Image 1: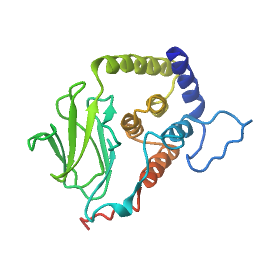
Image 2 (image 1 turned 30 degrees about the vertical axis):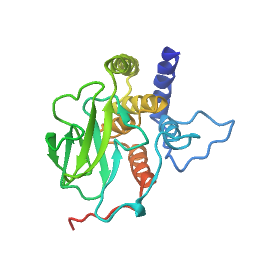
Image 3 (image 1 turned 45 degrees about the vertical axis):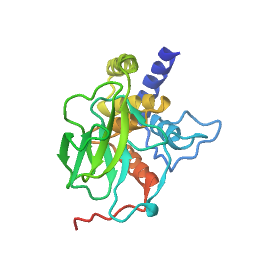
Image 4 (image 1 turned 135 degrees about the vertical axis):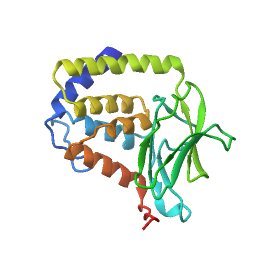
Length: 227
């Protein structure tokens, strides 16, 4: 079953590299062609009966707070595969940091004034451990790194996806989208976005996916307090 999923992702990634489909702008009839991986990932994130992520009402946040997008805060800890996760938010942040729960000591801290997404660059986070992602020294979201067995299994499957795609001549974006859709199929929301944001020069379609996802999750957008 796993090998079938990987093969499907590889074939779909190759096919979708030439498609100009934006997540919110496509309506697919039952007899039309297979949707692109971007559309499939979007559906996995938002259109399930019980979606892994839920849009937040931006107006309900306290004034000055930040919409912490990834990792987010469901009813239980959000699990992430990556031991160097992406932190993604909307709103003004001077710093972001990682701490152990209940501790005020930063394991890692990074200035964040001129960006709204940063990939963790500290020592690799430990499998199975819970951490707090902290914004501006106070607002935080807990998340948990997947256990070693799960991480190793997924690492092997991602290597297979990348190897097969490279053999077809697929570009960096196609590989990232295939990996993102793999994570979406497994409800690993934060890792989906990490792949989507890993492409240094995204296409118009991928840029639209990013923007649409942010708008879906954090509306109304928070004004930048630095202005």
